[in-house]
Image: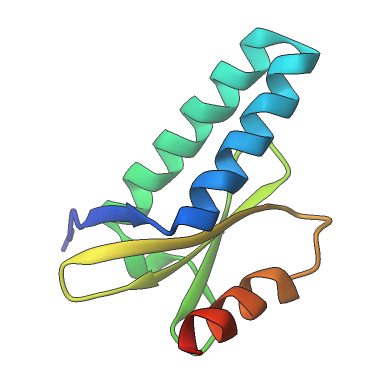
Length: 105
């Protein structure tokens, strides 16, 4: 069964995407476009099959982008997916954990 949930980005996840896109754009414009396309394609799959990806912590799932060393961290709600972070795989996973703690305060 497919869900096709709405995808909502946390403001910091938007900043992650903008920073990565800018970095790729500075290297080669086509890479930025390919990065954004890979992100969009992956989020389409997440929206359709939200529980198909690994749960890395209670209620937090992670999916890897194809061709790019980035992970999308997200939660599943009743009617939406919330993207918490889009991080380079070399960044410490504590980044998204800290964000959750900050939003709880």
